[in-house]
Image (cartoon, rainbow, N blue to C red; front, side):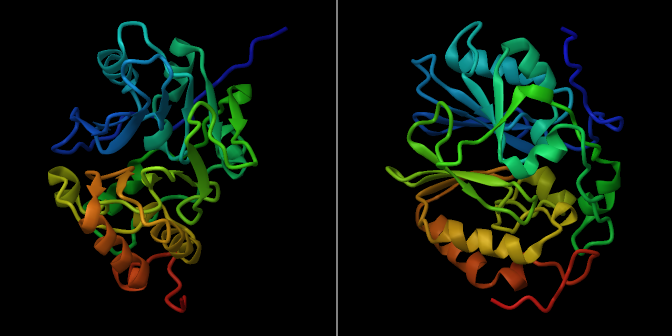
Length: 287
């Protein structure tokens, strides 16, 4: 039987952007480790004394060796996750996934609505360089956007809300940024892995990305086509009253600061998150 060929899109390449926290890892909780790769966070979830852990998201293009060495530093030489869970399929969350899948021989799990973008069938809408924001938004047409093909290596997240190899977490459908975007929540300690449903840095601003100045924000504007769904998703996450949130971009946020900021974002999403102009903007959204 012929081996299935997995592939990146024809436009896959490293991106010319980085941040002050690139290469920095933070132990947010004893079993939740956040590591910054250029401009995006990956998460290692599991007890570092155990072999039972998963990787959430897969970084930027050409970062596989860095992700593997970071994993081995935390879990030991030749360690490998039980699975890779994707919050969504944008290039900075799947940028090194083919190399990681091959190196570790692991399964990938994602929401079924992300499958067209993960199996080579459909590209996401082109990034919007005209959107209100800053230099990163203007640079966004340089970012890879063609779909990758994970073939039969990707499986649907269980319909009952469970997360493979993360028994205490549930996945929550949080669309808007992408159709099948998910966030992961653990009820016991109210730990939230939010992906890009909201972020804690103004991702459109080159200054903010470089310095990682903390500021709660909606999903990255240049790649968010459905602002009404995005607002609903933030409201859904705010209602969970998370104690700690690790987002796809920016530093983790905790405690009262998280609570106050997430309440503000949920209430004033139209003022804080939705841009004043851009090709995906409909200012008639009412909540």
